[in-house]
Image (cartoon, rainbow, N blue to C red; front, side, top):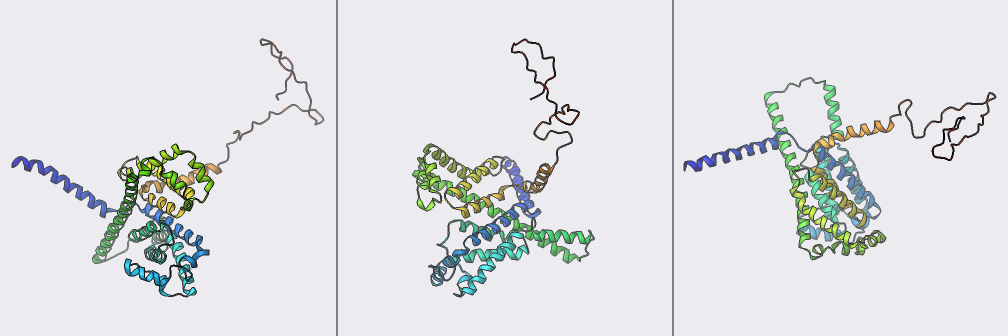
Length: 387
């Protein structure tokens, strides 16, 4: 009995230490502030581009001319529990106002103006447009909707936003003067800060877990398919007319079956291995491979919204020190590009040495003396002109 207590005591203390470390991480400071800001900018810009791209077809997708009528949408809402403010009226004027609201919300959310309020409004806009015509758009909307909901929990406006700029201006104006508060006010402020930190960190964890689950499940589903097993999956994908924005490009890639089989196996391996490489340096080459894969999907298969959503979601796994160093690297690259060459430094073409001129200003023509044709001939004794 005594030996069992001796063996269990270090384990118990180790578990307590791990629990304390997790609590400190969860409540100590908000993590991935730059990464969540990148997600805010990326998804706001992506949805703005999506709405502008579909502006000529807005009536057929979400408006009064849509084959998916408000009555059908209401019947679907009774089954799914979703809701959309677009079905409140069939008026074209009301729909135009909602569309303008969606555009303005995307812009303000991207810029980070009153981010707490705009994040909620942006999530409501994305959810309403998604639920109104759930069968009219591609699968990229599903992940974009989830990310819009998750970003409501995060403090995604503390970096690279108008809110952050306003806070810096306010701090500079106060000139570091201490603000006197009562003990109750200080405790309430500390509790509010801790609550916001916990909610933010939980939101970041949920976003990362969602992306890991997506990649892992996609890779495991591919493993179960016979086409991915024998390396012919990409052959059939490239020959689907629905995913051929440039048929010539798809047919040209299909001419290399061995390369397509290797790309297919590499895709499956990368997706399955992604959740297991996040805590090491191996995640950086894996993220690079996933970036190339999503760019290829956007260009070859014509799914830019889905690819853009996934590329932006992958940004949550890059550390804040990477994003914090980007402005410094950009400034350094800009200084190098505009830096003038030092005096006397060659700029590309060698300068021609000054030649002796004629007294009247005309160029003096001298005979060109060439070396003897023999190998060991003496050097010419007359003047020469470099050609």
